[in-house]
Image (tube, rainbow, N blue to C red):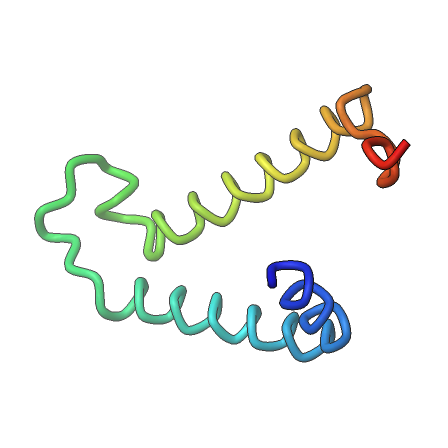
Length: 84
């Protein structure tokens, strides 16, 4: 079932990317305009609009880059490895 979902999404990759970008934009705007910063714990939370959205986006990008790097360093193998 998961492979069918992944294949379905891969066939519509452009639409999935556009929907993802729209979702990120909506969350960023909502965070900038709607989040209450009066109870902020740090300076960055209080004075940088959308700090947690930006921090989360950068963190996700760093995690993806490191995961791909580790995969290329020897963890990742060919797809038919267990079939043989």
